[in-house]
Image: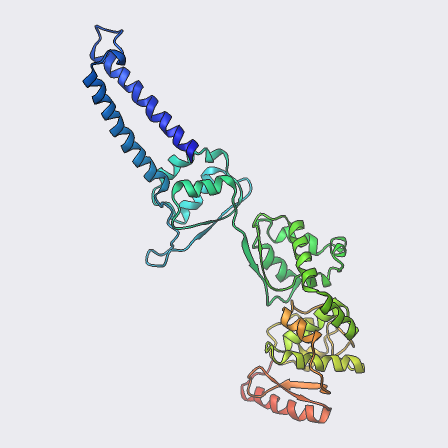
Length: 387
């Protein structure tokens, strides 16, 4: 800011004295040697006062250009002012930044912005990144932020993701590297092995939560950050509980994905987890409907039919015993902890309640289960849910 003020001062001083010399020479052509030093005392005082007034006026005007808020962050003039996210991609030029600001109608006074930007030499110092522009920012503050590359992190939140490709698209699109920057890593066996997974189980590396990262982060650095968060999540206590169940961390997350698909009720998840753990312990097929839906790759299915059960896939737990090859979604921490802290009981079956509350009725034997299932099937028929 001091350097900018000094430069403005030099511009005013030089311009003024050059102007004075010109005026004197023009008014007195017969005396070419006349200089400012030969002027009368009153004339000098008058010139000094005039200069001071001009300088103060110009300084005030310049201060207004520099500090007065000039960036309109509101899409709706009647809405509350909020900060605006400006994304500058790698390789962008100054005019591209201007075009982006204009496209979002952010510049109240484009000329003043360009004037200050040129004084600060921003056109030659454009830096990629994500920048939050506040409504109280003047030209100087905004340009100083952009010129220095003082990025603001983005908040990455991911949940309710079923397929690896969904993860690639949703997560990749939040960063400058895009989905295509992430896809080769998650589909490469060697890259996945680096983190202890294969191309199927690599999704376990991503623990649903909210994370702050820079928009310009590189794909490899992003993966390393996810690996760090994964290790933080899998504490010694969680690892010990998984070992006590006879399951690996990946198996716990795979089972948790089934539990999460069965119920979003966090208070019921430990009971559902207990059912599946009981079946695994006794060597009974899981026969989990969500795995059938996943195997058929048809998430519009609301009622699992025999034709769906017949579909041959290692994810179809009606056909294959044990856990599927990997998660059928990205289970949240609550579902993972439900598996690690299951409810102790002797239930082996459950079916959704006929009131469609999202809760389930549990049973210990097939007879009880079939009776409960008939009640639920009747409710489906009444609602004309046939597929």
